[in-house]
Length: 432
Image (cartoon, rainbow, N blue to C red; front, side, top):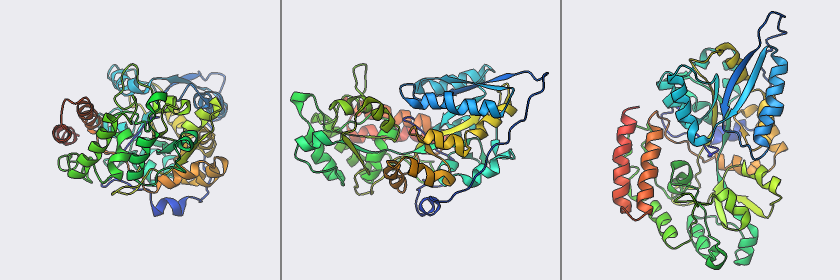
């Protein structure tokens, strides 16, 4: 997602980007996609449909449309690419329905959480069989690569990776007499209370939704969990004592008026990314894409810090997208070429400058050099976890989000709500 999105693959235990990431961080290698060569006069130009959620409000959407696609088209005469923006909330269902109708886009920039579901529904090409995939596999970071693997096969190309870190408003902190960002969960709670100024409609903390992407850093860092390591069971994990404690902490902050409207959502809700630069939220978590957005708005008075540590450590969520090729697409060969091109150093580094961290270990050193603020996110990735790599993830996420919504509305107790969510999630995971 941009999420913010993202999401997981067939891994036996939650992947943690650790020593492997740091040891490979500065490796450099170059690979690319061969041009198809000049088109003959008789060659008919084909147009690929490329569905994605690139942000249209900043340079992310412009970079893919005006920099990357033109380069690909120049190297591959006879192939045009039509970049089509689809709102994140509509993209998955629209892709599934268009596939069922026999008219899917040729290429999809998929949230990593969807790859297992789409592959098991038979909607994707097994790109692991392509000759160019071996080089991409070798160059990829293990976490992003793992998001594409289901059942021992690779169903997509790792496109980008990211995680969330803590954004804090320096002016708000200074006004409250707090010298710097919280480093522990206890400090986060205390600071959220101190930073809440009702007269200014300022909330100490923004939590951008009840879904797993937005709540997992709190749950995991406080020692809670969602499933077992095999992503086959939620009962005993999603409703564990540690998870209950973590959710209760968030509920209490909301009841006290320390968390803003973004948590429960609704027509009048203000997202963290919107409210943070306006002083409506003193703290919130977000990914690296927020930095270009704020730069474009001229907002600079903020800091970025690792997520505060709790009983489970400082744990955030691995996000990102994978590039997948529709099995029933109209131009599969050309689509595969374009998907491979998005994993070239040229494309990866161009998008990295717009907040989409590269999925390749071979470009990591250059992207950190080009974009120094990535250092916070690369540090956070050392302990970040992936969400359940299961075809049942989307339903599990819905079960969790709905239950948490009922809890926040006061319709269910924390324990009862999480037990219900866990039982529903068990069914979703069992059917995957």
